[in-house]
Image (tube, rainbow, N blue to C red; front, side, top):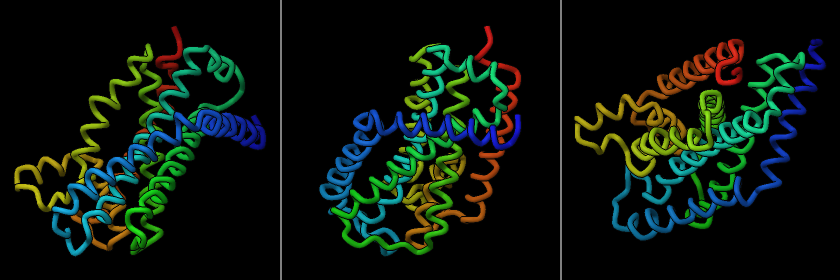
Length: 258
């Protein structure tokens, strides 16, 4: 397939994903905004007022990067796993597989849709936070965007992997419920890992989401609990590993062929 046709195929998949996001915006965009408002009210206003500053940062402001990143992670994963599994369930994915469309275009198209939704929702959450913290400090906009984008890509790819192995709609909720949610809540969204006892600090070092949230927070405040270069390295390594894994699974037809 000529490269121009590959780009057209990619655009077609991405366009379908974006139309889907906005068509059902009450399911894709609105819930995260409402959820984050509740987090800001409960953990920021009610409980946060009783918590002292963390590294010189007001607790309400400290929450913002963690809540934005939590929205990015959840939406990138959820969009891809639900969309691609829906295509499997409806058998429409078979039309792509028998077409000359390369596997990398299929993977890139669906994952790009997840990234678009994640960045949109992350932007909405950041905007909502302005009602609680009128002025948001940004230390390095490049680091903020890089961590948000790479994290969205990583979890979009993870959602694609989940959708390949899922055999029912129940299967697409197992990873978010029993893996993603615990790792996210224990990833430093609501606290700094430096304030944990030594044992739990050590345990937290094995949670990859810690590095994503911490690196993203560094972009806002210029302070990090772990080396930002290490966080970048883990993100990039995870993206490369999942790209290779997903392309290999698509080539073998894992979860797609009877």
